[in-house]
Length: 520
Image 1 (cartoon, rainbow, N blue to C red):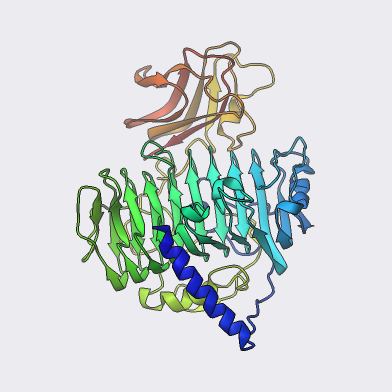
Image 2: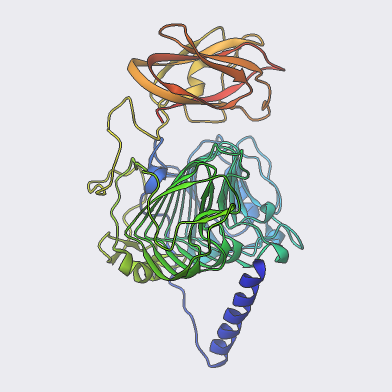
């Protein structure tokens, strides 16, 4: 599979060499500082603003990026890091501090929140060096290029992912970036944009992903189904073998993307995933939508897409393409407002806006390009909703939103130095612990609220401490469900004003960093 990318890349390189030989010069517009507001699912769960409102610093090395993170007053102190120049292994070292957890050979955004990383000046290139986001929230990455990150060969970084997210990541907006490789797995590369192990509320917008065997995934295996609520819009996927993206469970929204030369497969919805695919332009590609390489079915809702010279394989046990006449087999409600460009103009709009060094230009929703607005300070409010199904609005059923944010909490006796409120503050660096090895923590609302899912997230360093538990309806005392180990807990939708997570067994000291509740 990966040979397709390598062969096409060789041809592209040859063409560039010819252009250079005849004196063609490609200029790059000067990059600018962070601007605009988050879109898509990154607007949910409290919104994504990155380091807005905090200090702004300049960095020209990876070590300087890490030093800026480590120099904050705390791991959640807002900061915008403006990056200029080439960031590589030679200038990226580990820096220590109470507000960071860094490593050499990778840009490590770990156990932190409220950070913007933006390319400025003549541009920022992360050369063979990946960006790793782990146990982090409210992160903005804008206007940078990440290229040729390897998982094998030399040098290696970030497991071969250009941008990789894992372990309880929340609210990330990646915008106007260029992610590229120089081949597939056999050449040492992995994914360009990967999410796994409970990563949610992410938007990838106005970006380029190209020349790779794997575009990206949501979920590392058929059992890693805790990820979701991902938006992809106004991106260019070019010369990608597969995973554009691969979805394992969860919900994703793809609109106004331009897909060119998807060599083996494109949007691969499987293991119960649900994809809403609106007004995209698919060109010169194969099997651009369906369930591939598995018998675990996924689902899609399609509308307004253009399929230009797209070929479809025959269906089989592990191969269920949506075409040649793609039809919806589910419905997906989108909780945020958005405006669609016509699919016919997507190639033009995306060519003028997507990627680093494009002046951060965006579409105005009517096939016209415009300059961005000011630096984000608050989550955006939109006034023109899409003419597609959307959930009923209201404080008790904001589908896709963590209902614990803004709620109340109480519980049994707590350990010294911890607080009930730490489980609903959206900060993985704070937590509640019972006074002993067992105890209970509750989320409560002023009126009845519909809940069907709870996510219990343990603090860093304490994963696996929680053993047996019960989830209890605090209004009636009825046990909703029981089990062992932290993670996602689903149960029949129940209207209640209080839900209690009761720990009845543990190894070590239980530490609940977040007690998230959801209507869906």
